[in-house]
Image (cartoon, rainbow, N blue to C red; front, side, top):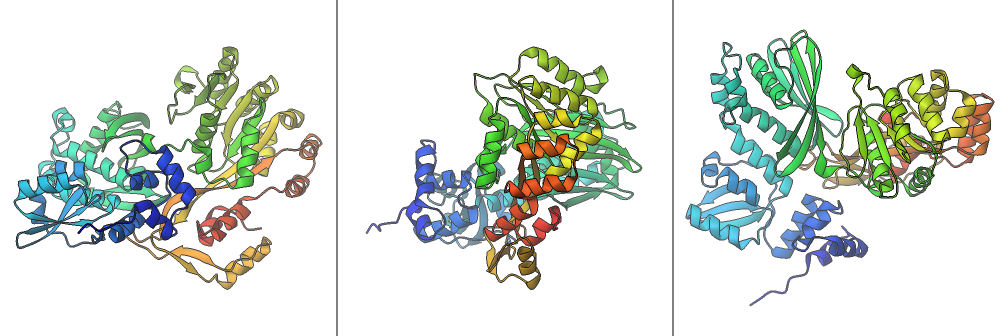
Length: 553
């Protein structure tokens, strides 16, 4: 007898995980052959874990957590790595003539039939999350994939001749591919290869925090460095000066761009690889984390035909992502957009991007001068580093261009004093500056292990100091999805300062910093700390994260 099953979308709405409007927009926008669950995942409306739990209810098939699962290594020979990766399946255990397999889609009967024929077992399916399965495949199929043999092969005497580091089947090539694949699976932003006196430490930066992935024998440093340098077209014979390069490759059918930086240290060359995931490039202003008022103000700023809009914050605070999202919104056939960057991070269609090259005299200032002769409407300068660049940017905005740029300062108001200290005339600054956005990234509470708690006495005091009340806060208790940290993913905090006539007058008269702040308060500016605390109230992050990046006054 056929059982009537509830549709996945209806179940998700019943569980309160999505709204009917979100379901409707996903149904309208999804590709023709895309499953609704995948469409909702792609838009970030639900997590892998939530999807697996609802599918368990819908299909009556158990869901298994693969974090620390006691896998039987012998079973991995039954299903090839290619099959496992292509179909997102992983063998769990064997009971008599039954083979239990974790799958993302346990209703894929073609794959189940293929497995039954190739293994000779009766296949029993359980549901696993996509992240869990990919992590298991990378860990268990690669764990013995020649690594012991690699340590033996690469004895201290071997110094990585060319055939070793370019032959696709050589152990060092497999090791580097494995390091890169694991970093992408863990959604790392950077890979650090740190040479130390007796070992080489490989670390990943995930959600802004570095953690050790593996420790390699010291004698492997030279071949590891040689392999990465060959991939990035760097000089493998030069070990005394820093080098920069770039690698473009496809990992798991995903275009990945890597920026490589080498630096000579006392124990050898340290390598840092910045991962620019072209598939996950945030090109939508609505998805960056602006609250409604800040989004409205920022959109109005960048839609003006002239003026300077500055985005400020320390390294790694997501300034480039916000700039690219702004350019993406402004990009159309009617405007000529030219950027000068160091380096060009994301290549965007329809935008003319220039790479800074100081060796041949192509600095920000020199490039900016040339850009002005190219009849641009919108100019993006990667960073204002000196007086010359600042002055040309100011003059460009006064001659009818919209200029977007970044600056390293702590907050929006500090940017004005920094530019004046650089030597920009206050009256020019007052007439050209449209607005400033200060930005920081904080870790988001993991949606799979979120718990609502009572706020501590100190938290109630912190909120009271900013004129807010708090009655409940959210924290992650730690699960397999977030590697037991309680956090997964990051969200931006913003301080959007719109310059009005009163502020311009203060800048022109070179009045005190406090007057600027008073006018900003009158203009209902939401400061970084306030935006952070509002996001704590929404259950998106924690007070500790906000206080890590914003100052409580």
